Length: 336
Ligand code: SF4
Ligand code: SF4
Image (cartoon, rainbow, N blue to C red; front, side, top):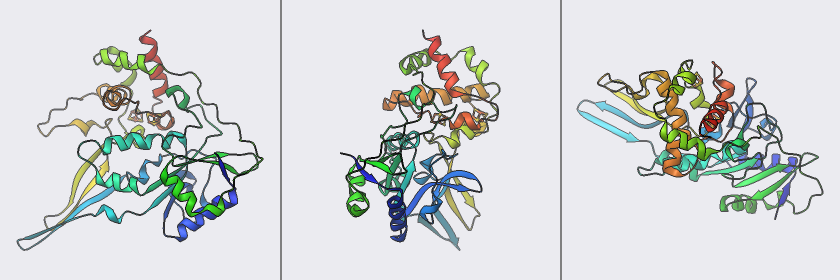
């Protein structure tokens, strides 16, 4: 059963959560750029634009300390950063293409050696998704089997109604708990109709065909043809809700310093640069091939899903106009 929340009550909910010391992260403008960032008040939230970067930063920051060290005389002290200190977080207004990518990261960060930094943040995060009512030319969630009303990855899911209120669907215990704690802000009746959802790029890719072609074409002149112009800037990976590569770097001096975790990108020349000097991905097409292989073959081999939600961000930011949707479409046609 759907319940409903008015825009005013959603603002009250955000204000109450902030007053309780909970970190509320939502789309807001930072010097004119829409980004998912912590709010200081409900009035900062915007709902009419897809943030330029994804929501993954709430659980997987661009950079974080994982330990510090200090040397005094012969004594070395190493202090781990305790993930228990991470704040309770409510992510509000998360677009379906971002929310759906969070479980894709769960699978990676809980596989084998568990990443407690990601997982502790994740345990403490409640996701309130928001259906999309507008799309641009780069959006293609429907082509990878999703939709502007996709609820996967959300604990609560809001659908905008005519007049500015929302229908609210409960999808998990976390969502249920949030509603129970703020039950007076929700109602069981509304006569308003849902706004029409966005209509992104319509044609669905045959992802099985794409994978079948990738299975057989690790070596193919196609990679050179599409990727020689890639400049290896890494922007596509950094804005992507599903990319999750990182590096561990020690920073400091002999006396004191930090071990830090930073986002990394397979488009970077140094990503696979061995200490010996050898680099198995020594040309940009090999690096771009890895990006496509990882998203449409390797992740599927391991976890049975595609590592792309069709958000279109990598298309919007690529400085040389590389369009992953066109590339995947081209690959699917090759398999016919
Ligand atoms: S690969 Fe591109 S379109 Fe797909 S989820 Fe990442 S940024 Fe979005
Ligand atoms: S954003 Fe474009 S140029 Fe930069 S690494 Fe990605 S594909 Fe290459």
